[in-house]
Image (cartoon, rainbow, N blue to C red; front, side, top):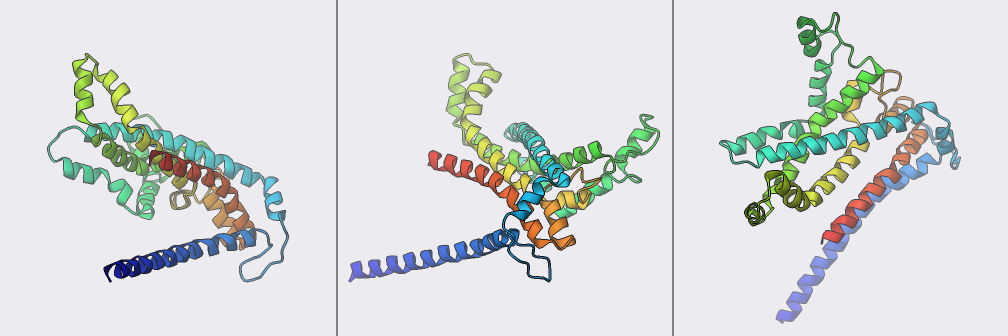
Length: 292
């Protein structure tokens, strides 16, 4: 009787697990395959298109704005992620020290990550405003400049500004994640190294870094995926301008697919990003499986 009850319980649990997994797969697979189908058509919003094969993808290869978008996306990700990792590591080392009010300080540090992206982006928009920017006001009163800086109107300053805003938002994620890794490092390892005469730098290099490298790698891969797929911050700050110098895949997809109503071409733009993100996702899964 008891064995039959356990078997029945297991079967019901197994059934619901399969149903849940099937529901998740359908929920994720339908929009993905719909996007693939749309990318193979000349569909526009409000008009069902016809199958055109790979024409959208071929046309994008000769699109100079798309070339600039791809370049911007790589710059945006490959510049910001290393800075977020390094600054996050420094922040984690500071937070890992014994200090008064450590819990409120750690909570405050998470604010840039917790605050909605739209809200923090509006704050940065005010900071970079060509008329009311507090940075321009400060530099002007110090005599360093004679007129306000147009942060979001100059191509180089614009991409630098959105990168800085992304770094500011992403550092707390790295800091708290690496802090969790630091607190899992056995204190005995540091004590043994100190007894052997290792300096603070050597303990950091040979004990701390090897112990947290997995955490740093996972956080970096996740950050690369999120940064490549970013949209809100850049759209609110620059909408891809000036002269398409800050367009990334997300903003260009929105401009072509929704604003220009070319939904088929927009789907093709977004799918160009899929292989890149898939590679990083596979690397992340391989590493996690290796660790397990």
